[in-house]
Length: 267
Figure 1: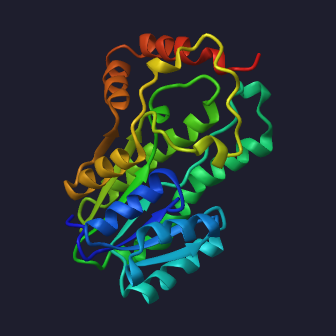
Figure 2: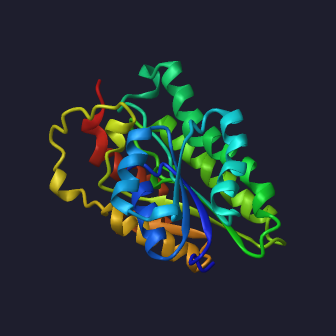
């Protein structure tokens, strides 16, 4: 889908990958509805963009179903239509084993990552279906196909987003809506602080071996993939490499990521 002159909704638009997606969409000539739970973050994004009425900002908690159901009409009022939805918003869990993870934290991760995505998709689908061309893209994670110790519930939520998106793709094959599932690897964002998570001491982990993709490059890869109508979009060499390894040797890939990440676990 050519993004120029399209109206695109982006969740998590106040920071990290989401912010860079908003900025790149504007550079490509799109009209954007930036959605975030933090007003100050959206204000900062808008000040950086300086895009006038091509950027509308909406403070919405995507875990609130009523709030998301009210959002499409507000976007249409601002931009006249809606042509695409990119669900970027997400949080990680504390780096602890499942047995040490509180139920309220589990619920929060599932609410934001899975139910937030479901709420947005269901709210906007009726507005996207009549469009001549439209697109839905949901951010899963490398952790959605590869188990990461200390991020088991996060990974489960992102695996659910993966299958949710793949099922949606199949359901919409006979429509004008394209669907993409996005798998970022390590991206240099502030997702830990935005998730309220402190990273434990890395111990013997050699941080220099962990290569990260910049948020700017992540946004470019995502939007290039959407414009190319790609079904799966892998962000970063690590995501592409581990996808192949995990398909060929899942046990080996699991041991490899455990060796790399085990020192993050407390206890």
